[in-house]
Structures are given as C-alpha cells and as structure tokens.
Image (cartoon, rainbow, N blue to C red; front, side, top):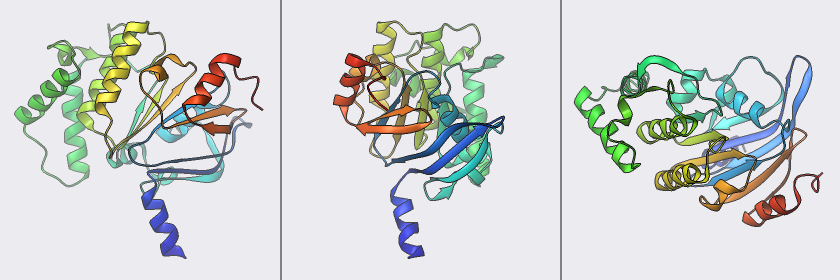
Length: 257
C-alpha cells in the first residue's frame, strides 16, 4: 500500500491535499485540494481576498504563514519540508504579481548565477560562460524579445509589461518543471497580454506545467487552460474546463458558493 501511494504521487507533479493555512491567527486557506500533472495548464481564478496570493506564498516557501493541516508533494517530495532554494532546484518557478527589483544586476548575470547555483546543488559541472550566454541569446530570440533585452537590469527601470517579459525570459532559460504565475496579465494592455500568452504557448511542453492565477478571462482567450478552478473563501469550490471561464465572465463570482 505504501509503494502504491508513492507511485501515485510520482505520477502527479503537484499534489495539494487538505491544505489549511493561517496568518496572525486568521485562517486563509481551508482544506484546499489540487492536483497537477505534467503537460497541463491550470487556471486558478477568484475574487480579491479569496486566498490566491496566499497559495502562491506558501508554495514559494514564505515563512510568514502557518501550515495548520494538509500536505503538498512536488514530484514525490514533501514540498513543505524543503527550503526555498531546494524548491527551485527541484524545478519550481514562481512568477510574482509584483516582481522584486534588483538595481545594478543585469538579467544575464542573474541567470548565470542561477544556472551555476543549480548545477552546484545537483553536483553537476556548470556550463561555461559562453554556453550560458548562447542559451540566453537563443531564448531571447525564441521569445521574440529585443536583441539586448538580457542586458537590462532585473525589473529595475522596466515597465509593467517589460517586467513580465523579464520573468518569461527567466522561465525560458531556467526551464522549470512547474511555473506558478501570479497575475502575469496584471496591468498589461491587450497587445502585451497577447505577447505574454503567445510566449507561454511557445514554452508549453509535455514535460512542464503552468498554473495561471488571474482575475480575468482575457489571457485565457490566448492560452487555453486544461482545467479552471474557482478559489473562493480559501477553498476551490468548483473546477471545470474552458466553459467555466465563460460562466465567470458572464455572471461573476457571486453565482458560486
């Protein structure tokens, strides 16, 4: 029975079971359940205060939150027992709604440091500087970004749209297994939303998965989710396919309890 449970966990990339989370004594997530397999795109939608950002913070490993009950397994490993850097090495990528600015640090140096740190953590010989630069340039072209985009600083002096494209370049170069993207469409005009969505579609493979956390339908017009989940009052209260997005757009979240 133990072996069977282990094999099932390995088939599922991310498994969240009965997760309850609080902060400062206030319960935010309540027995939340979610399963994600390789190659899938999941959209998590819900009103303000539903617990979406708390879910991202817990998966990222922020220490302000109290795990009251439940478990989270990532590729068979207990995610809640892993340090932040261990989660990254294992293949988890978090795209925050408001990315942190790092003045004076270029994207190329940031990515080089991340690649070298991952190689060291996995006891592997890191790629040479020329190999890293070649990969960054290739991914920059692949995403149809300006040729010198990787020379820009990490989110400093960038527009909202450029910050999202910066995160996409990091995603493309680091090649995580699972990317949790918190409102990557936030603050973007329709052309920028299309560009972000088109690049996410380019990055989709059968070996990686995406979780898009969003309020609105518009990005889901361009990147089609396999599953849509409504998060409300700290729980996933309904799951479905694309048709669920249309229900939300037509009648809002009040129809769901």
